[in-house]
Structure formats: C-alpha cells, structure tokens
Length: 148
Image (cartoon, rainbow, N blue to C red):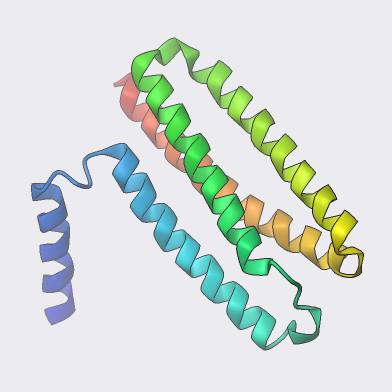
C-alpha cells in the first residue's frame, strides 16, 4: 500500500512538473532505465553462465548502442516536430546510418579482437535488437499521437 502511494506521488510529481509530458525527456528516462536493465542482465549473465565467454569492451558496446539509439531517436522526434512530412525520409536515413555505423563497429572489433569476435557479434546483435524494438515502439506511439 505504501509503495503504491509513493509511486503515484512520483508520477503526479513528474506530471505536475511537466517532465513526463515532453517526449524527449520521457524517452531519455525510459532509455536510461532500459540501459540499466540491460547492463545488469549482461553483468549477471557474464558473471555466472557465460563467465568463460566474457570479452573486452562489453559494457562499452551496450553504451555505444544506447547512445546511437538516443541520438537517432531524438533526431527523428525533432525533425517530425518541424516537418511532419519528412518522417519517413528521416527515419529511413537514420536507420541506414545506424546500420552502417554498427557494421563498421562490428568489423572493427573483429579486426582488433579476433579471439572474441563471435561472442561480441552475438552480444552486439542482441543489444541492437533490444534497443531497436524499444525505439521503434516509442516512435510509433509518437507518430500516432502526432497524427491525432
């Protein structure tokens, strides 16, 4: 009972301060929460089940995908606010740029760390999938809201 009251009061506080009404700030709050969850799950997995498969720059990989997701999402939201008709073009452009950046990162890692390339690629693709689902679902909500 006490926890529900605190949760409701926090939600009320954020809404009163208009923090959660801004799509950019709301996205960043959700993205940070997802980042923390992904890092915790990754740490847990690689400290227990996959201990022998741990690789250098694992956490940096997660932060890299998170930062690219945040930057591209904020770019799309800003563009849609200014020019709603440019949504498709900007969304496709940011997707292509992110994929090229991610591919270059994977190839670069494979070049420098050949021993751990396979587990890095699998980890990178899982992290990419998680953040992509997150980003696309929020963009769809934003576009539906913008149309009404």
